[in-house]
Image (cartoon, rainbow, N blue to C red; front, top):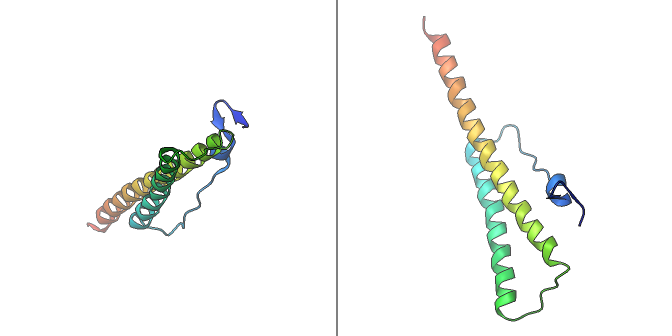
Length: 101
């Protein structure tokens, strides 16, 4: 697996594009969706191991890196939601101060 400074290739090249007009609620919904993908993937992997199924040791790191990307995407969405909430709060305060005589 191609890594640079301990970071897998897939993490460096996975990009999440958000709608610039998306509000915090939409971003948090996206974060929940990405984290649910990660949770489902972990459960599937655990089920394969529990059933004694064959887990390809060569593909296991790729699967785990994919789960890591799901988690990373969820975190990015949550961070963007937090930043947008703060931005809306600051913008509202500035607008209310500007409206006062």
